[in-house]
Image 1 (cartoon, rainbow, N blue to C red):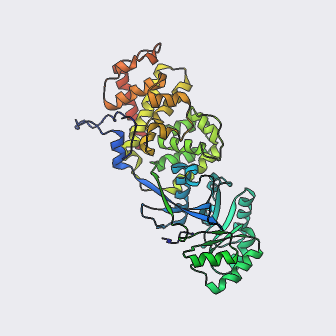
Image 2: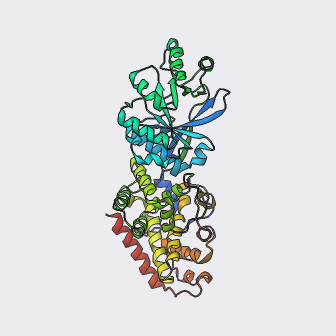
Image 3: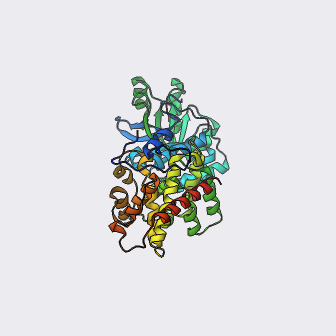
Length: 451
């Protein structure tokens, strides 16, 4: 762990607010942005450069940060690592965090044996094994498997030659030697042992020019520490993920449920769908086409990767509001169900249109979660053009259905919107019918949120 310390949402257009379901409250409900301002919390990530012998950035170590203070505050190694991976892949994005460089991630014994390690691309991530890990035959076999999969293995915080290091060294690619903890007179011999094994050497916690000069003279390949740069703080809005929803999804995956069952479960939790799209669009998939339905996202990701991601989200935990108490999640969930019902009324035999309506609803609020304009937020996902057109400009049949949903959110009469030109030729929707569908959507969300 090489950190030397060891230690308003904007939008380019306003969205209509959710309709209040509290009979005694006559006030206008808050806008999605206001909801987000009240419940949204940021998640944080530290990024410290690893530089070469000339001082050029070669890689980054990714560090857990519990809050805006630039310190670690790690109480659970597994959860801290999970948070780092979730925030890098699903929150901020691999490209934004790493650019073209590799990321070093601290990892303990528990996560080394978990399949979720394969959510990280071996080409982009180095597994930095914590100094507290004891190497035995079972762990060494697992490390051998990970190296065959392409992962680089680094030993963290080495400060002396020990029996544990002697066992681990043949199975590592990189050794990070701690300049704060290693006695200066012991450094030459320690470096010689590591160099003889042919490992890449990183001098970590280098805090002075003298330390850098010493490391340079001893032949270290890479350097990290406050002399070069303190960790940079990166931030992203916190994802609101329902733990019960993740457990239900994992249960379905465990019994090899079919695609229809997975779709039905994912419809209950729009935030998980957003995370799924982030996963599908990560560098591990190399996706060459846009996503137009939940079914397509599930098929592209594959059930095993979805299971790994759901497990990682569970590990990551967090202190966000309970799902059923989060008004922004309530808005997204109710809207997605309402648009599903409206789309089914309009085109009862067109499942592709219904799927697209659900995706439109889910991603119509993603800018509130991620911040920035709608165009900026949607740019992070490979959504099909009709869905993007509907969200950005209310264009096409999906855009008309979205306008109806927003009017229903606000409590306005959506009857006029139902006869939008984009819906020409569809079955007519009456105000009474739309009101019933809105109530049904609200009841559906409340019923499932209470589970």
